[in-house]
Image (cartoon, rainbow, N blue to C red):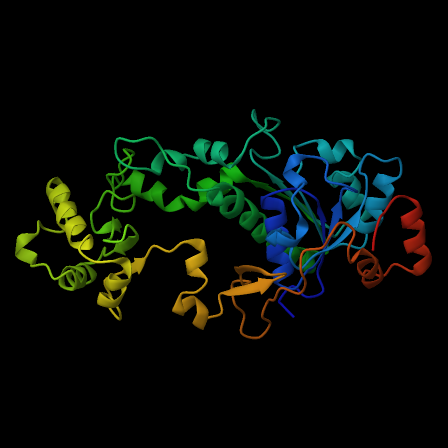
Length: 381
């Protein structure tokens, strides 16, 4: 099942955004076959597979990409693929004999997805980096943090996964749709620095109309407004409020049992510090769970600040079955949801080479062809 059922994706082993894109496609029904190294070659890849959530739903073969026969073996798989995902630095696949020119020559309809931090060209293209560097150059990191304090890295979700893997998955899906019409493949160049910038598109308009200050922590959406922030509760936990609209703000004030006349006006910025003090004092009077009961059924734009573990058991998430368990690991369920062709996690993360033999058969390789590929260095179980 899934809207991408029947699509074959060849994924080259990597960490972070590339596997995340592959997971998104696998969740939606694509048959994702990973070309793994015969053994984990560096610290970033030595984690055990059973809890590597981003490998769920996939199958694996192994191949030493620097081996004598590797290019031809890999291109045999490329010839049966609809899409390819790789996350090496620019030029690496070309040096391996597996760049877009060679791949598209073998399979003209192939969608060739490339995941990098800086993009395939430009002054920084060849340089190393990580999520924090990409979102820094995109302007996003500068905007996250408290007033007068240093920027705060927002985990690696903005660059690696939102601006990286999700962007690549979207790009591959778009190119697959176009290829189904034109019969021609193309290269998808997904750069995390550009993806992070794209996630912050709304703020471009705010800046153009002087509705956003580039000073941290003084705007409506960055914790500057006391009615869009987090507050500590009596038990040392936290709650979030986002009462931007006047009617939601009025509901917030009512649920806090405050009188509007004792508060500054909602948009009196000069008196926001006083409003924040009043809100903080009110929230410290009760525990997080007590406040959940107070705000039950309200439109005050309130939610408890949950840990990852707590979020799995919240009544709303449980009702929607927003989490699933795979190989003993609780994890987010596939999203978004489709009414007719729902996505699903079809299998647990594979060990190196696991499921490869069945995948080769499903991809149309005969028994003799499978044996020839095995003799040339392709490992499978």
